Structures are given as structure tokens and as C-alpha cells.
Length: 103
Image (cartoon, rainbow, N blue to C red; front, side, top):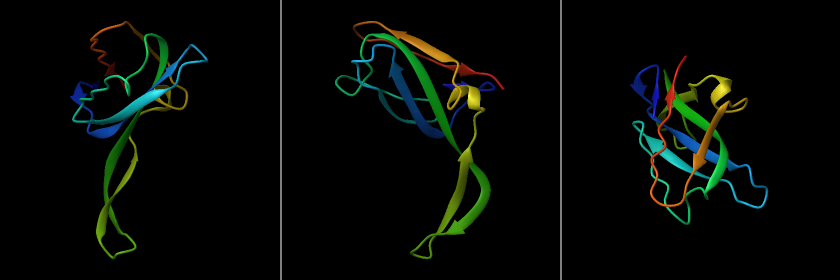
């Protein structure tokens, strides 16, 4: 999974099935890679896909334990999550679904 030609850092991907009886599935990705396998993986069929990237802002804040933590924000345009235009058709068996996202 890349954005503007570069692997996307850390985030999550969600497959929302077109079949209303199927359950949405997803998980965490890191450095542009994710692996979703049954039963956690998406069921066969057509899906709308949401991708969220937790992009570091370069700023930090202190948490409740007074530890310094990086401040993260959504790094992708809405067209890849809240107003997603991404789709995927999952077929039975092992399947690789790669997303090359553009600005």
C-alpha cells in the first residue's frame, strides 16, 4: 500500500462488504503491509474499502503518565476513508489486494 509512491507508515484498513449479511473486517498495517486471513479476513465478494493513516505531525504531547508521545493526524484525503471511492472484489482463496493511492 503506497501513497504518492511511498509506503504508508502505520494505520488501519477496513473492508465493508456489499452483502448486508457479511461482517466488515479489517486490521492494522505498517510500512504499507497488512495481512488479513480467515476468519479475520474479509469474506469473498465486493467491498468498499477505507484506509486511515496515522501520520506523525512532528509535534509531541505528554500523556497521563507524563510520557512524551507523538501527535498523530489523518494523513490521507477523505476520498480514502470518510468519503471513500476505494473498492475491492475478494475471491475465495489467497488473494493479494494492493492499493496505490494518489494525492
